[in-house]
Length: 550
Figure (cartoon, rainbow, N blue to C red):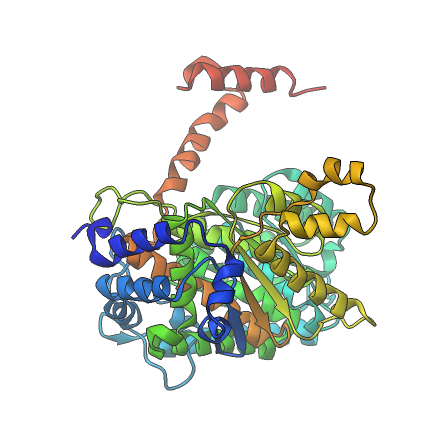
């Protein structure tokens, strides 16, 4: 049956209509046990969704919808290694990357865990050599700086995690990230580093990604200029490693097998942080810290797999998002971590959610009957409050928010953390509560003349009723970070299951890549007329060719 014709979907539409004029203040007033019924704890995380514009009936109906969409069976298929990536005929077994000894994840009958653990042990040995100083550059000096060159899933996850865990960083090794093909990204970094003490990590699933390979070639040219007597083979052996699912391509590039780390075609790029793609994290916080991050994600895997619908964090977050998007009409979803260390989390989740679930056809290729992924955006509080929160409070748009905070500071500094938490909780409270006309008038009457009251009153009223979820971590550690990321990964899968879409392909990004390859000659010496393009693009390229030289 079509999704929108299911009994639970129709009942949800009716409940949304019934709640249309009900303020969150009233929902709290109606139900003294609302918070107890609308918060969950697992894997050290607390998730409070009581400030969502959601009734208990709506929550029950959402869970019924999950059952009608066979969610438990789909979760079982995911963990069993079934071909849940239907278009590419692959499983999606990123959970195997954080497996522990004794776990079993099979693909076509073969247990993948021994291979994963062997690769992890190889990564441990490499990190020990770099951090211990036994890995030497072509001039005999120890490595002090590592440049991770990748893009998309080969950059966003490791970059985010290294920044998030800066408080746990080990001394001696600085890990840097380059993703953009804009020369400013790489050149500005190389200007600050010593090539004799720098290691390049090229991260590319196919080892053909245009931006990554261009940056890698330029970085190696920089190394070669600083080591004129070293052969390319020696430079690669001492100053470059690869993380790829195509070891043959890395070998053709000139890298020896000992310098190549694997991940596999059953891992999507945006789910690959847990593999050797996370080498930058392991170098920054140590292999023990990296494995703690894996353990936190594994704990969330176990929770997701076993917890009932009523207690399951990823399922609940997905159902709340679906309610906001499909029944309340929200088009965007803000992620606001009240942690400067998590400032890159919104960008990471943009890819995870929008690349996974930004689809308009279902697994069978038929148009989806409803809106799928929201537009994900956000930034770190408290900066966010002084940027776009005015619109959230009084702009008249429905913008659900995930607030994320830690009970303990990763960088303790006197009263700073209490101030940070106070702002986080105050914003969620203010967005929920708002300020009505009577409250605004009472505040103005205490300090304002009658004439000014009439003038200012409309500007002091806040509608409130803005939905939010607050996620709390005891502290930002490798383990809690791993659990947090895995929570959002599984949330994406739940939403995709209910919408009936495949979250593990991304064909939409391919056309732009193909056209870029076709247009590149026109930005060089090729005749512009020889390359097929629209008149608009021809105008733009012509302008750039005319102004290429100052």
